[in-house]
Length: 103
Image (cartoon, rainbow, N blue to C red):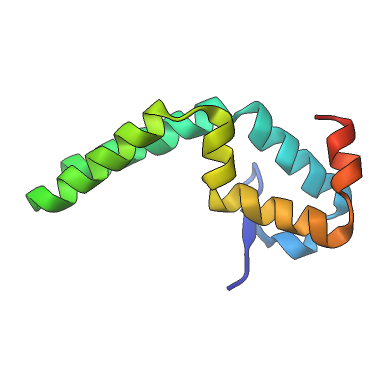
């Protein structure tokens, strides 16, 4: 599976094709906006629960939304697959020290 990033103008690009600066800036963006991104994800889960049929499916989605609402931003980041994909690419390129400079 190719891991991708969606740019602000809607272009979907493979993470492996991002420049080093774009990759580092994407991680910084996600870190800065983790709270808002987490809340959007929780809202989307709640919305999906309301539009889906079946009590078990609705209960499961509401539970996932509640867990997401209650998480700390740092914990949400560590569990979020898109963030982890960016981190793996940083590690693969040996950019971890450069990323930590601006943490």
